[in-house]
Length: 132
Figure (cartoon, rainbow, N blue to C red):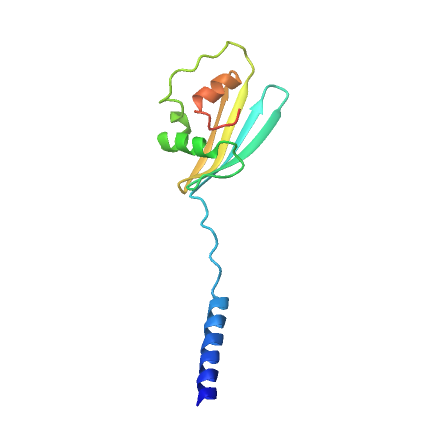
């Protein structure tokens, strides 16, 4: 009787282990917002890119939490960035910077680009979303 009980327990344990092993591993959920941000400086064409993930914040962006918070305040609308901050004082130096964003914000496609007179203007107008 004892051998039958032991065999039954071992069979049940093996079945549970097999079932657990066959269940697909749950991958981390993809961020609801993923953006590729590009900064092009001056006429020389110096270019840098970074990624920004939000919900949760991450990617290669050096200040992802702050950038995601700024986009949240703007409702994901890049044209609304910088509207809630105080006016930033910048020099009149002309050193053009072209910023662009492509990807998704809360599942909706994003394509945005704008050129600013200098890095200071670009940073103020985009609430620091772009690492200028």
